Length: 504
Image (cartoon, rainbow, N blue to C red; front, side, top):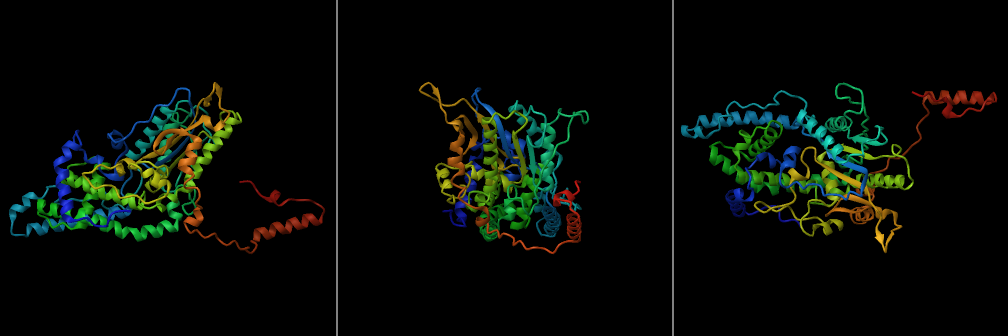
C-alpha cells in the first residue's frame, strides 16, 4: 500500500540537507534544471539525459513489418487557466516587493532578485493558450526524421492513408503535432514547395467518443477517482511546500505563501522549457529544492495518471486492443502474402500525457524491482521514493513533451527445432517493447502484457451507460422519399431506398 499522506517535518528537512550535500556526487555533470521539470521537460533535453535508454539492437535477419506509435504532443504554450495564474503572480510579486519596501529593514531589499520588481508574464494579455509552439513543431518533425532513418524500408511505399494511418485527438496541439510529424515523415515524397512535401490525412474522433486516445474523458469511474484523490495528493505535497516556502522566505525576505511558491515553480518550468531562461524563477530554488519540487510533480502524475491506482491504466484498454489488432492484421497480411501497399504498415497516434502515461503503465515500463508482477495483478504500487533516493518514475523521462511509445513488430526466421523450422507461424513474429524485456515473441507479448488486462470491459469498468435508441418521428425529407418510392412502386418500378441517395 502507499505510505501515509504526510511526512514528518524533521525527516523531510534532513532529506533536503542530504540532497544539498550529495547532489554533486549524484550527478557528476553540471546541474541543469531543465532536466528536472517533470512532464514540462523538453524532449531533446530528456533524450540527452543519462536516464534515457537507447534502443536495443535487432538481428539483421529480422524485418520490421509494422509500427505502432503512441505519442504525446510537442512543447506547448501555457493554457488559458495557467496564463491567468501567471497574471495573478505578477500582481502578487508587486505587492510583496512593496510590502518589503515599507518594512523597517532596508538591507533586506538587497536580497530580493532584481528581476522580481516590475516583473510581467511573457503571456500577459493573451486570452487563448495551450497551442503547439515552434519548438514543439521541431520536436515532432525531427522525431519523424529519426523514425524514417531508423526503420528504412518501412516507409518506402507510396503514401496512402490506409497504409500509413495518422490519427490525433481533436485538441489542436495534438493534431498540429501529427501534422508536424507527417511533414517530416513524408518530406521529399510529393511536389509541394521546395521541400517537395505532399498532403496527407489526419483522422480524429469526436472528443465525446474517442475512447482510444481520450479514454480519460469518457471514463466516469476514473473521473470519480481523480476527484476523490486530488485533495489527498495536495496533502502529500504540502509538507515539502511548507519547507521550500520557509526556505525562500528566509532567503529572500519576502512573505511568500505556499501558493506563491507553487506558482513560482510553475513559472520556472515555463521559462526553462519554453524560453530557455533559467536565471530568474528557477534560480530562486537551490538544487535540493528543485529535486523536491520535481518529486511533487512526479508524485501527482504517479497517483492521478500512473501506477497509483489500477483504474488509471485499465481505462486505456481500448488503445491496447487497437494496437494488438493492428499487429494481428499485419501478421495475417504477411501470412497471406498480400503485396506491399495493400495493408497497413504504420499506425501513428498523437495525443496527450493523459494518454501516454496510462499506456506506458499497461506496458509495464519504469517499474521498480518486482513491481511488474504486481501490475499483472493490477495492484497499486508504493509511491515513488523521496529524494535523495533514486527512482525510475520521473515525469521528465516517462512523459516529457513529444514522449512516445513505439511497439515495433518484426518478422524473424522461425525457431529451429532439430534442424527443422518450427511450423508455429506466430513464433516468427516478435515485438520490440514488451514490459521488462526489450524483445519478445508476439504470443508472449499478448500473454504477459495484454492478457492480464483484457478481462475488463471498458463500458462496465467506466460505468458508461448505453444510450437508449428510440424511434424518432420521420423527417420531411424521409417522408418525401417514401412518397416517391411508393409512387414508383405503384407504377411497377422497383426502386431501392439507397438509389435515392445523392453522393456528395
